[in-house]
Image (cartoon, rainbow, N blue to C red; front, side):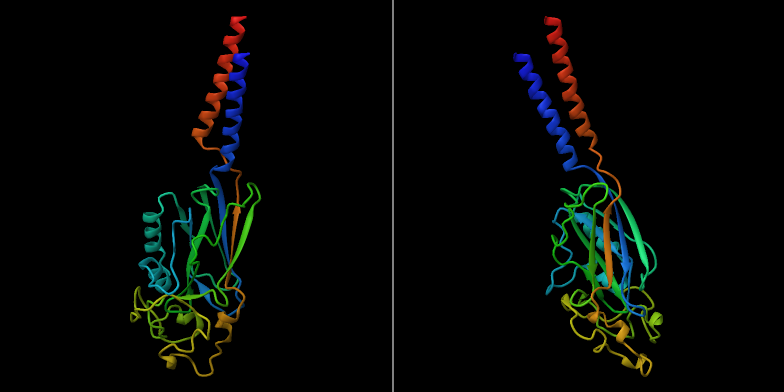
Length: 279
């Protein structure tokens, strides 16, 4: 009877290991960004995405922007932000949806592998420059705003609408000025940025854009007479883009979990054989 008790104990532990494997398994996901703005509206730079355990705070409204946010908000350059993320989230997973700026109707995609959506990569952050602008951007100022733990393996999907009224930020790092704003030519406006990190420093703070986004820009003379800004008025839109995050493979237990499970089963076999020889 004593051996049977051991077998039951080991079997129960093995089952528990098997169940826990699914809870923190490596999962592959696909991230899709779609610019849902109306025709003629703003575009976005290649979207940066990061998956973390809530330890990464992209920015705080009312505070100065980090260098990472400054570079993506002014130039659409996600490199410094990626460096910051890697240095502060040792178990984080990140990527950038490559391609040219995404204008209305454009779609960008990225697949990432080996995420732990129940632990180390449970929370989602994103950032992208809004063009036309000097330092407008979209991003989440709450590290825990987007919890992905509810994604179901083999079919889970979460959609997040970004930008639009009250959800576009001014980084407060560069003076709003058509002489140095990015992508002027795409909108028929003169002047514009010709290289990285141009424009006058603002020395301000991150804040929401809740009024006419271009009314206070300097050098309005670069705008053609009678120019219609209404398509660019993202403060009147429900959203600029939609981010879809979906599981593309079923979670696979980590190798060490397999080893522990097989070890437990092997021990059951050894006890059983010893029991049979003793008869």
